[in-house]
Image 1 (cartoon, one colour):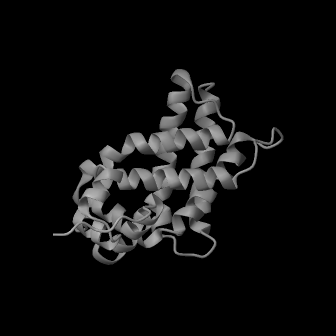
Image 2 (cartoon, rainbow, N blue to C red):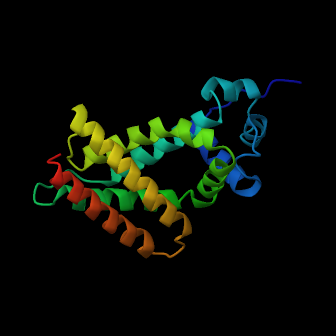
Image 3 (cartoon, rainbow, N blue to C red):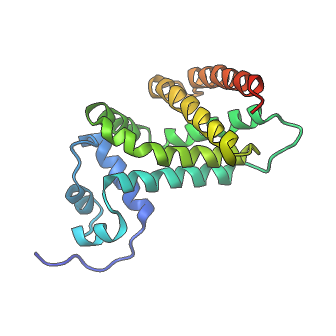
Length: 193
């Protein structure tokens, strides 16, 4: 088989193409060869950019983080951390909507292969660290680790609601996020975190 022609390779385009393909054929069924062919790359070229499908999801997570962080302004000391987190996480869910069909396929694949969900957890915790930092919340030390863990739990719980929320304004997602952030705030205050 002849090698594919050299071309400019944009990782973001490959991630988007992989998600488009996942939306139509399912993430679990999508092979690395399928992704390479869909991106008009050789398998060797894809291998140079991504270690595996999980690495493609990590690149997506970093892209989502970057978009959220670019869209959020500086921390306003007049606004509570909870309100900042609400705005940041709703921005994140808005960004997720741009990839909705593909992400739903990925989430569905986790049901059949829970190991993949477990493998994704450290990457999700890193993302939540960035979201907390964007809200001006300290994430270092044991207290910071507890906050990151709690925020990851909040995010995962609200993600389940987002998954079913097809409204234009994500009203169910907003309500769930507000409720869960309220609970988290009470825990933080109770334990002086």
